[in-house]
Length: 346
Ligand SMILES: N[C@@H](CCC(=O)N[C@@H](CS)C(=O)NCC(=O)O)C(=O)O
Image 1: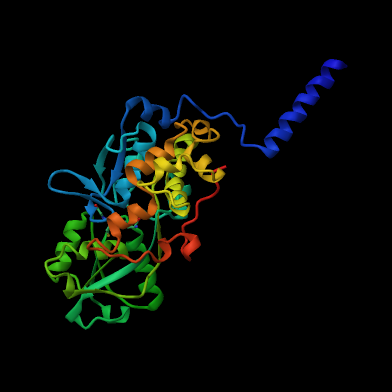
Image 2: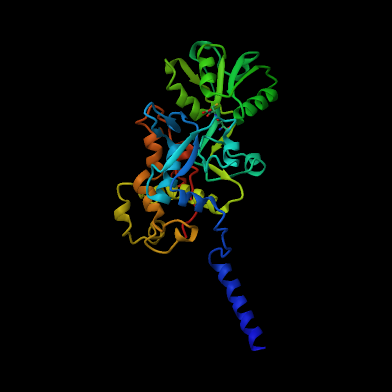
């Protein structure tokens, strides 16, 4: 009698604890990529490598860009070493297989989050790192101003992208016939457009703006104001590994939250002593949010110290001092009218 009352009291306590506190479900510790990556000491990141501002490899083999900085943030969180990343260049067609076969630990490559990719292609997406839309680029002197002007013209795009599908949908909807010229390689796609063998090229607007900077005369090309679609770009990992997916998710949210709270690479070491409880939890000077997910408690300090917050990353790669000069627009914090919003670090 006493025994069963004792056990029901314990059970009740457990229920009430899990109702008010954190999730008490045990993680699958042994099987997670998080543990394997930690013991390997390096993270393998799939990127494009061909898109300045997002992921680009220069002639010295050095990678840079917003997508690259997501990889660096993971490495900073895990190893306190943002350069402990091995990059793999992946084109649009090969990217998902590379995640499924574990050739890469993370895909951080201008990839649009869609329902089918999330549910049947076997990806688990992290938070959106760039809100984009699909655009059309044409020669300035081409007299092509609207989609209808592309009737029966050739349009270049890349295979295995949402762009290829969106263009088909849009033109079918408008009843406009056109010639789809599809490439696996982005360089061939842009070279073909540049040689005038396509009247237009379509891709995410950020990519068009980025690649336009690499054309001999960028000013000779214009991008339609109109967007054909929404392209929310997000990093992803293989489905079925909640621990690894959580690490990616909260590393990205840390970048966003740090900007919201005014924590930068310049002030992060002072902010460790902040009186603000939210900052204390974020930076691990109070609580054990990091340890709870298999990361060091100061993982956010490591990230911000080495890589900066989202705003710093944006400015460095896409901001007014770069060739791309992309306005923040939707990619601004929610507190400033944008869509970036990180859930509480609690
Ligand atoms: N966001 C779109 C497009 C992504 C995409 O792969 N775009 C091409 C340009 S059209 C690209 O980035 N290619 C780079 C490469 O192949 O390295 C998607 O996820 O399908």
